[in-house]
Image 1: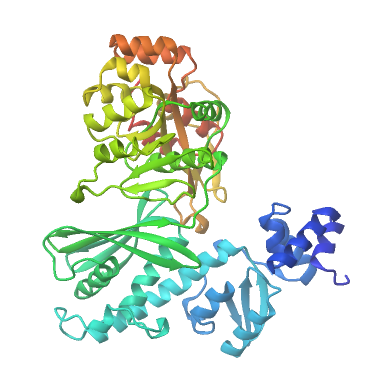
Image 2: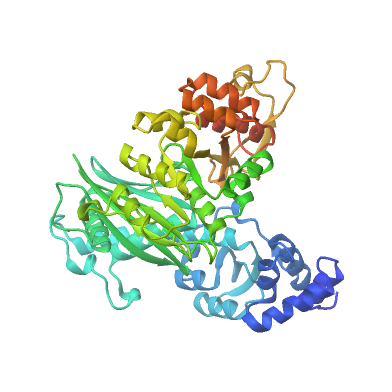
Length: 564
């Protein structure tokens, strides 16, 4: 068939309209981006539709990088910097022809550079950008880690007690960086690529184990010889502004790292153990965009309740749950939804994790006397409309927050409880009077993060009696549950990504009276159900029946809540 321009091809196939093409071409002139990227960013087409169009246009084959294993020796033909710069990865070598997976097979400059570097004939193939980035991380991470560790051994010499300065300090030219610096940078980049929230470096007998928390669970990545662990730890301490000579007390540090155009906020913590210092890095993407309500997992009744809570102009809205349940992310999105020029929003956080434009964000520093209680008193003198308190830790903070709410302020905060109803009793436990809780509290939001079943290896099955009982379903229910069998796309875990299940308690007039009267938890739950309250068990059941998550994952969440 005759060659057609991409835009004309998409119009001819009915994928986009002439008007959409004209709009995209106008935007292309402004942004100087490739037409395909403009079309995807503006929602005119999906990446899959672009790939299909390019296959027809260029006559190139599609390669599923998740279904193949790339030989490590291919890394020698395409330097890592070229692979990352152009988002390309070698797939196979057949005689003198190098098959190159590309997110953009129209990038002829990339093909020329790879041809020059490899001295091979280049045969382009098309793959999704995400798949190429993950393949680059796996190929060069595995290949590079072993090489860098060997370089670290050579530079460290025979003594593990002596750490050469050039191995841990920054250099002017990144290309000339010491092996330890390159090793740490590669770890951080890999964590970012695989959507890890934390990196754990754990000294053990004879080695240091590196694990990453991906989709809420830790996964072993690699090991570092014990004689190199001090060098790696020293590098991390320098990055975080910590005392490199102190090994016997815990330390906290902070660093900013740029990865693929994204600014990562690194919170670094050290803890002495019997085999040396353990380091944990928390990764926060400062350039991450706000999540939509659907991305949060809000839909149906949960979405209606969420929007109803945000229509309040005064009162307290609590977000409750254990660490890592999604409280901070949900509250951050609530604040973003409410942020407007005519509203004064002030937050107290420890630490400030997400930067929100137009919002005054204050960092807690207990060493200087800036506590949640003292900060909250100061905020009340700043003419706020909305106040966000990172966490209620004591009765003083709770009482100030509640009294601020009944004087016309909208207050958001978090609390460590297992479920929505028990938040009422937690406030009473820290010393807040029942009448004050009843007057100030508007609602309680309980998010829980569940892993999504991998769509690439998803399989249906008939649930067991135990699984049905767990979700409160009759033994004779004729339903299908789903689980992931494990594939390269999900690193054989059966799960990809996470979403939240919600338990949202809306306070009615009757519930307020019961709280003020000191009614027990069972009575409050009964009344809440009359008003449409849906428990975490019910939310998990819906997601399991829809095939979003598995019964195994639901069990993990339900077992952390109070039994019904």
